Structures are given as structure tokens and as C-alpha cells.
Image 1 (cartoon, rainbow, N blue to C red):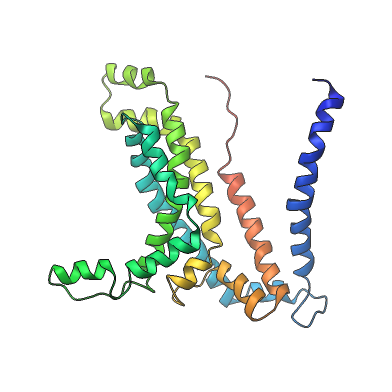
Image 2: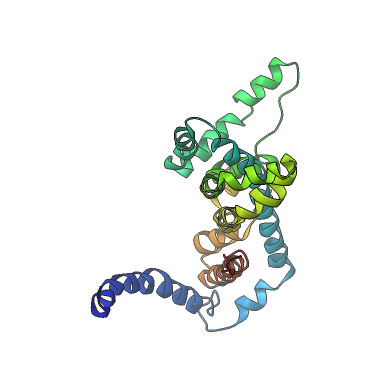
Length: 267
């Protein structure tokens, strides 16, 4: 393929990046410098560093961390187990299948499951316990979020573990390493790239959650995603909403750089 042909194929890609990535970011940055009265100002950035928004930012990162941590704690052993099953592709498909269902439908399903007269409370009553208020709690928010995001954690880890050379594990075992040592010194380091990709795929969207916070957590959990929705759709303060979005974009870019794959020399 000559240089002219490569350039020709490169044009649609660049058009896509400019129209759907660069242009929206520039537009968000532009709107962030206008206050609610439509005047050009840095007021929104001053407001963002107020205690209210700083607390909201810390809360968003904390919940995103919890969702990512629980997804990793459940997803890694699941991916490891899947690679050792007979019909691993079928089991992987069953895990990915819920991602094909609309997010809103899955969220509404949990309103019924965790509701006062839902199956979870029916189970509590069956075992002689009183019905619990499960909705509008931190537990329900984190649980539903983990359920929704966990396939995105399992898939990259599964791919990394599945590509692992079995002879490396066998060699470590032959040299006297215990199963824990094999995992700690061989399996986990060699699948770290899959873990990083999974953490990116979970942490970044978890930072900007808003629909689950509204429906499942009520007003108990307020994140930056909720604040963006509030400013754009309720208060109609597009400038403040855009300012929060700018900081979210910066945070996501930093996270991607920190967890990005670094090229290492061949051993």
C-alpha cells in the first residue's frame, strides 16, 4: 500500500475524530465560559472550586472507585474460572448478553427487585426477617452499578488470561512455586494490561453516572454526572454544566494516561 492510498484511507478517520471528538470538546469548552445570564466570564470555574462541587467531585471518585474495586474483585476470579471451563465461549456470551439490554430497562428491573414488595424482601420475610428499605441506599446504587459494569471488567481480563502461555504456569509449578506464588508472580503480572483496560472501561463511565443515581439511589448519591444533568435540563445553566464536563474530560484523560499500556523492552 503506497503513501497516497494510506492518506486516502486516513481521511474518513480524521473527519470522524474532528466532527465527533474534537468539535464537541471545543464546544463544551466554549460554553463553559458563559454564566447563566449568557455573559462571558470565568465565574463557572470559580464556582466549581467551591466546597459544594469539591465535595461532589470527591464523592464521584469515591463511588467510581468502589464500583471499579468490586467489579475487579468479582470479575478477575470469574474470568480466571471461565478460561478453565469446557464451554468458555458460551459462558462468556451469557455474561456479555445483559449488555445488549437497554440500560434503562435493567435499572427499572432493579426498582422491582429491590422494592418493598419485591422478591428480595419476600425472601427476607420468608426467613422470618422484616422487610428492608433497599432502594435509595448506597448499597443498592453500588450493587446495580457493579452488575451493569462487570461484563466490561470480565471481558478484557478473560482475553488476557486466555492468551497466557500455559507453559509459563507449568514451569513455575515445576520449580516449586505454590499456587498463590504462581498467581502473584506469573499470572497477575502477565494479565495486568487486561486489568488496566477493565478498570478504564468501568471507572471512566462510573464517574459520570446520572440515571442510576436518580432511579436507584434517589437523592442520597449526588455525582458530577447528576450535576451535569441538573444544570443542563433543570436549571438550564449550560455554562456550569459544560464546566463540570470539562473537568470530567480532564479527569478521564489523566486516568487513561495513568492506566495506559507502556511499552517495555523485551526481556
